[in-house]
Length: 81
Image (tube, rainbow, N blue to C red; front, side, top):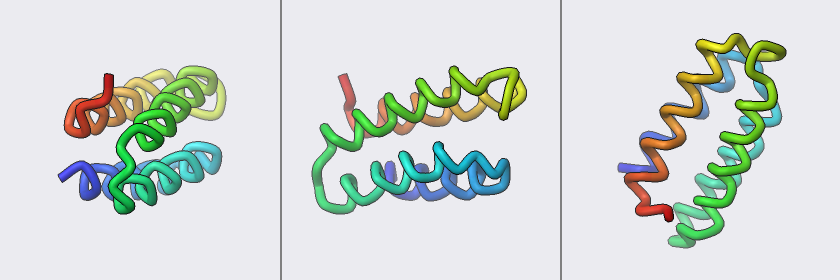
């Protein structure tokens, strides 16, 4: 389920100590649990933007690419535009 996928991604991001990312994903999870997919999609887009911005900085390029791929899978599962 998207919420389980998101919980797994939060655990991964927590392991990388990427705090900005954790905050965005936790907000997205709350929206999903409340049945509000549109704001959840917006939070996931913001997360992807943050991961791209930190690629090669706070995150390695490989880590950022993995996080972005996972976020895109969750967006697909949610039916985000």
